[in-house]
Image 1 (tube, helix red, strand yellow):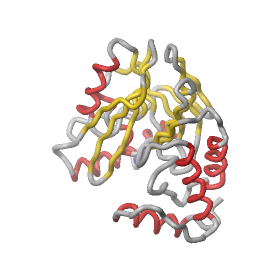
Image 2 (tube, helix red, strand yellow):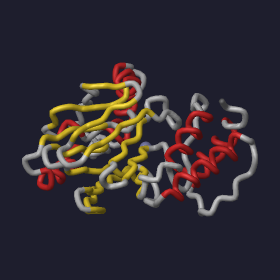
Image 3 (cartoon, helix red, strand yellow):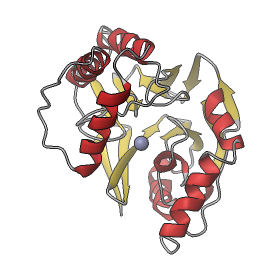
Image 4 (tube, protein in one colour):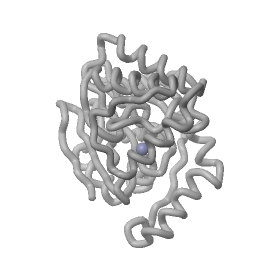
Length: 252
Ligand SMILES: [Zn+2]
């Protein structure tokens, strides 16, 4: 249910899964602060990270407000919860974050009991830089998969935490996805020579190839053309790919 493992010095990965969804968060250990990139699904599972955080101040950052990224916060002794201002708006909308939790709790009452939603306590619009002590985290707005998406870049590690802006076997596009700006933003990251490792919330961890793969996929969907997928798709991604093909052509 919960898997914790080191990826790099000062960076750990945490994974949860539910209902066929596998989601990944990250813990970045500065000297003073630990940045928790998403709190995933299970509050109890998040407690595993307390040992590695030791006496550091815990700062939670949400990549966006989707259900599989934000439920574990209530188990953590955080000092702040940072996200895009649109993420906070989604927490304030009873038909969004709150409804998703109630729907899933009705389906999985045992596994999902005791979750208390924690809305962002600090928001930003375009960019926000955090000093973790010896490491920094540059948060940037990157709407695409959802309107409230952000990415985090850790310059000292060359790591880009992509949230759901990048994914394998394919990213998920919706009717309101700003496809052109999504593609432009990803292309800009693909040209940034500081980026060495790209960590998406779902799918494979890779280098720049992951960004270029997603750019190619999004451009092909926007052009309404067929994309030669190098992956075998399960039912979830088959449905997602069909939706992407339906909603993307001509999407701005
Ligand atoms: Zn997700």
